[in-house]
Length: 166
Image 1 (cartoon, rainbow, N blue to C red):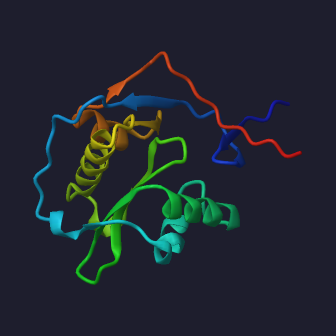
Image 2: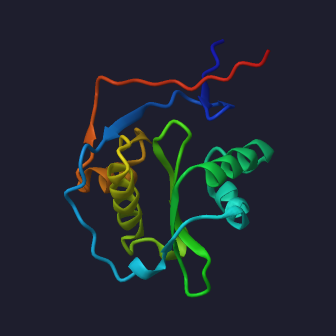
């Protein structure tokens, strides 16, 4: 019997094989005009629990630790509600890929993801960093959001995440 595992961010998850699109954006020509611009902020450590419980690979102590590291050491963007609580966010992995894009269910369909993708991409481009992401093959909503903003798929690129315990 062959068991397929997904290895991501230091976690190993038994599951069916997962294939990801690799999308990049050498420049951000698309500008998102939004009424939420004044509510764009960065995540802080008080938001780790929220992000961890919504992340597909989170929900445990390792996820909490990974998210704490990302929020502490790398750029993030979020849109907050009227009480200053995040309703949508995007983080940057330690290998510079955008990820963990998420919008709370009650705030979906308002264009928050496009605002955050555009904001993060512009920031990275301005600082001279590459702009790219990995999107799981079956995540058509994210794929569409990124490609509508000018991201281009690179079908020749493949990546794997591994953790070695010695």
